[in-house]
Image (cartoon, rainbow, N blue to C red; front, side, top):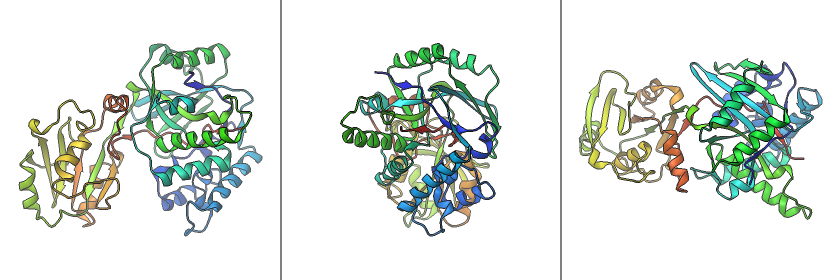
Length: 413
């Protein structure tokens, strides 16, 4: 079963990429999205977050929102801002964030491989978010937000991408957040065939980010397959837009936790309870954990370092050994009464990109009572969980840098 195939991408015309490219649709709220599109009529947010062009009280899942996305997509195509490539190809995509560089491949990934578990998941999805992406794909007849996939680093693949990216890129710009985006089209048939074969030889791919996009693509494919009496398996709906990176180039930041109250406890009583499972050490500076089993905590205007008692660490369970699980099992559940962090509104999550100052500020404001900083989940931990068919706790990983929406879209025709 092939894992990937080339496709004729819909992408910005030469010189337009910087004006079109936008952050992923799900890393901002509606107010932030409206601010981002101000003065940017070509921004892809007009397609990925089309409610920015409708009244502020518009339901983001209303049919009018998807219709507006279609209208905006058609406008950018008719104006020549977005142009379809004439032939199927792959695209080499490089992201540079400070000193971090990662180079991957934009491709259409196999829905059949996803359905068979060869493209592996590690998160549950939420029905409302899945439904949203299904509607977006159906109305646009295109996949406009890529799934972020990872493969175990393979020298043959990485050498090809190194060779391709030695040439001058077709797209090269730095986004407002400081991340540099570069893109090379791969139209040479021998190179395309070699990449397809090299990926087909892999045991699996892993979803790093984009579980809802992947699940939605599978649902759309199933519906269209059922409605097509002449289905062959070659139709474009059998594939979904993806960017694939080698696992050893990934940068995962922590996904920190904040809790609104101490469930009636005083800070002193809560500290006393923590001493049963942790060595608690006051810290003069914000605590960025330096390894597994270590946590930072900001409580009542003070930072503390929490070091887990090794006897409290479960053996040989890749899910329960995750630091996000250890914090949940040792503190957030038993001491703060949050049994279901997916649904309990007393807990909030902050990506590590926002820094430790964001944790302190929200506690100092009185909005929340306590914040915890975590050591980042590691890529080998994610793959170990996925290989067992298990699911990680919510908000376990925050990947940086983020992929840009709008650089390459996959049309379903």
